[in-house]
Image 1: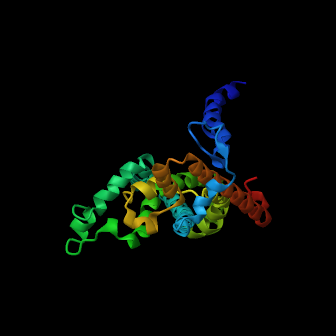
Image 2: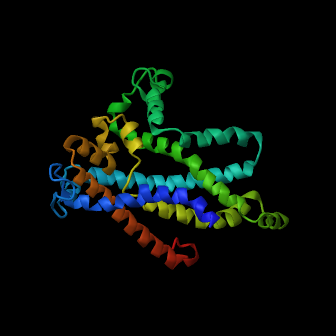
Image 3: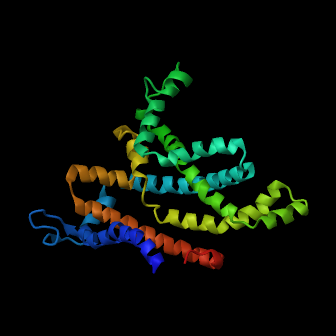
Length: 291
């Protein structure tokens, strides 16, 4: 019982913030009329979902949402694992103590601050890049859409790699040290220890992280795609995602039924993708499936 008492605050928080709002799912199927109230508003079936697919921007926002997320998943896993292994090999040296706060810091600060840091680098007149690196040929970053796939990828990786590396470092810390000692006795180099011990034993953690990422593949980091580009309309070709499109539509039309439909669509598709991905893992390597 004492353990249930300790769990109670977290369980109450999860219930209020994650499960209680699920009762509002029906809003996605209604034409909300404030004079009639939520329950009295007319049912309209799947009409709220049509705006996601009938708009001229449907292809752009779906392409960007899926494309960026797939890229972020691959790069995030590769760089986080690489960084975790590197930090583990460095150990508790002075370099590790200096590098760790620099790596972890971006995950502790708001995306609003990250946006202003980006603006300080990219401002066409006073930005660090134009003033110090390209003084003779400044670039108007906020009006050139072609640069933003690279900028957003760099910002995202800088923001999440540190946190991801901590998870993998914890997994590496749980590996039996006798395995490495036996490998050293047999003459295995550090590279071979990483290749034949560390990476194979990290596979369950990698699979779990990939499955969790797949569940949000139709979602996007709103702060990254809205605040970092400063909501510049010229950049929508490469920065528009489902989340930013729904937010702008909600601000212009105040249609909560439409935004609820988009959120439900993202959640249902994410759930289906996790189930499918987990079944694929179960057939390939049943021991490492999520459930």
